[in-house]
Image (cartoon, rainbow, N blue to C red; front, top):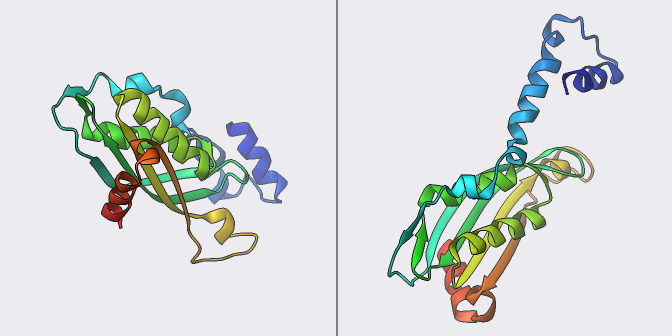
Length: 179
C-alpha cells in the first residue's frame, strides 16, 4: 500500500523527495489501514457475547452515533450519524456494541444505502429482536469537494425490519424520537 501511495503522489506531479512528503506514503498507508479496519473485524467478535437477559419489550434507541466512512466510488469520506433502534425479545445488546457494529461496517469502502442495510441486518441477527430500525444522516465529501460542490446537501437513508417495517406506529414512534 505504501508503494501505491508513492506512485499516486508522483503521478500527480509531486516530488517524494520534498521534505513534507518523504514519509507521506508510509503515513497514508497507515491511515488507510485504520480507515478501513472494518475488513479485519467480525460481527461475533464485536458483540463478544454481550447479550443480556431482559424482560424489556419496549423500544431501545441509540441516537447520534457518529460515523466516518469512505465512499466506494471516489474513496472520499462521508461523515454523519446513525440512529439505531430495536425491540428486544428476551435479551438486550450491550450499549457500546451498537456503536461498534456501526463502526465495523462504516470502516469499509461503502455507499450509505448499503451501510444502513448492513447495520440493520446485523443488529437484527444478533439480537433476534422483534424489529430493528436504522436511520443514517451524512454529508459526502465526493459531493462537496468535487462534482456539483454542494456544501449543504446531506443524505438520509433508512432501513426498517420486523415490527419497524410492518407496524406504522412503531416506525413513527422511532422516527419521532430521533427528530
